[in-house]
Length: 561
Image (cartoon, rainbow, N blue to C red; front, side):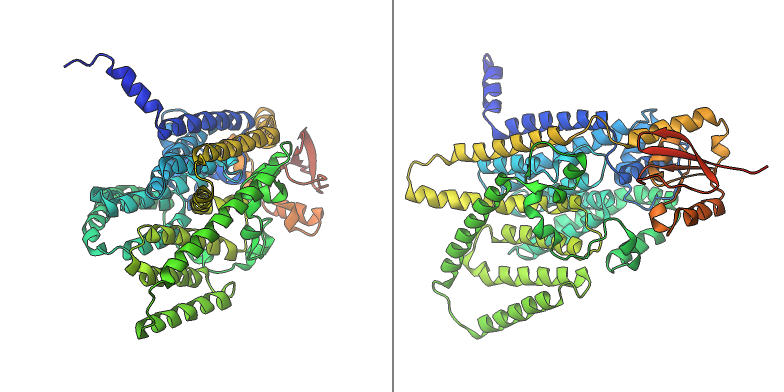
C-alpha cells in the first residue's frame, strides 16, 4: 500500500480542524497563565489549605488534619507528586492547568452536540476568555477543576443518550470525581436528571447508567475508604452539607458576607470583560470591584437580542395548531402555580426547595413541547437548569465570592452562543451572503485578546503571601526551637505551609481592641504572632515586633523573668 504523502495530507487535514486550533490556543494561554502564577505565588487562602491537606495525605510533616474535611480530590492528586519528593506549589497549579485544558476541550464537544464547529470553537474561546475564569486557570483552587469534570459528565450523558450509549458508563464516574473535587458540584445532578427524564427512551438508558454507577462504587470504594480513614469521621462533611442548606449566623463575621440575593446577576457584565487594561490584582480576582468593558455589554446585548429572537420564533411555532384541551389547562395551571411559588418563596426558603421547583418547572416545560419534537429543547433546558441551580444556590448563600460564578460559566456561554447564532441567522436572511464565520472568529479572538491584555495589566510581580514565606524563613533561622513554639497568624494556612507545622488562626478584626486580642493570644500561649492583613499594625501588649517584611510583621511574646 502506497502511503507516500499521507502524513502531510493528515497534517493538513488536522490543521484544518477547529479543535486543533482550540487546543493550540488553550495550551498557549494556559502555559502563559501558569508561568505567571508560578512567578507571583499562591493567590488566596484556600489553596494553602489544599496544599496542607496534600502534605497530610502524603504522610509528610505539616499542619495536620485541621482542614481535611475540604474536598479531597485535588489535594489527593497533589499528594501523589509530594510522595515523589516534588513538594512545591507548582504541582497543584499545574494540575489545575491540565484539568482546565480538559474542560475547554470537553466544552467544545458538548457545544458541538447543538452547534456547528465554528460556533463551538467560538463558545470555547469565549469561555476561555471570561475574566472571572482567567485568573483561576492555574491558581491551585478547586473551582475550575470541578467545572471541567462536570462538563465531561454532562457531555457523556448527552452524547450517550443520542448515538453512543457506551458513554453512559462514564457518567457516574465523572460525576463522582466532580463531587470529590468540589462538593457543590453535586448540584449538576439536577440538570443531568432533567435531561435524562426528558428523553423519550430514558428507560433504555438506565442500564448503562446503572452499570456505570455500580462499577464506580466498586472501584471508588478503596479511595473513599482511604478518605474516610484519613478524615477519621464523616461528621465534618455532613455538617458542611447541612450548613450550606441554612444561613449560618457566623457567616456575618466573614469578610465575604453579602446577603444581596441578586449579587451575581447585577455583576454579570463584570464577569465577562473588564476595563481598563491596567489595574490591581485584587480587581482581577474580584471583578465586581472593577468596571465592565464595552465588550461585556456588547456580548450581552447581542446574545440577549438573539435569545429574544429565538424565543419569539419558538413560541410562534408552539401557538400554531395549539389545541386547548383539559390536559393543557391542567398542566398550565400547575406550571403557573409552581412558578408563582418559586418567585414568592425565593430568598425565604432553603435553596434546595427553590432548585427543586426549577427542576419541576423545566420538566413541565419539556413535556409541554415534546409533542413538537424540538430536537434541542432538552439540551436548552439542561443548561437552563444548570445556570439557575447554581445561581439560586450561590445567591441564597450569605457568602458571596465572584469566583463562585465559574460554576455558571458553561451555561452562560451556551446561551450567549445560542443568542449570537440566532441573531446572525436572522441577519443572514435580510442580507444574503453575510459571512458569519469571520464574525464569530472576530468575536472570539477580540474577547480573548482583551482578557489577556487585562490579565497582564493587573498581575503584580508577586503577591503578598511571599512575604509570609520570608517571615517563616526568619523564624526558622532565628529560633531553632520554633517547632516547639506556638505560632499564630491571620493567614495561618500560608504560614503552616511554609513552616510545615500547625499554626493557629488568630484575627484582630474579631476583637474590640488590640489589648483584647493580645489577651487572647496569651491565653493560647502563643509565642509568635505573624500579622499580614492589619493596616496599621496593632500595638499588642505583651508582644513586640521583631521583624518586618513589607506588610508582614512578626511579633514575639515578651516573657518577664
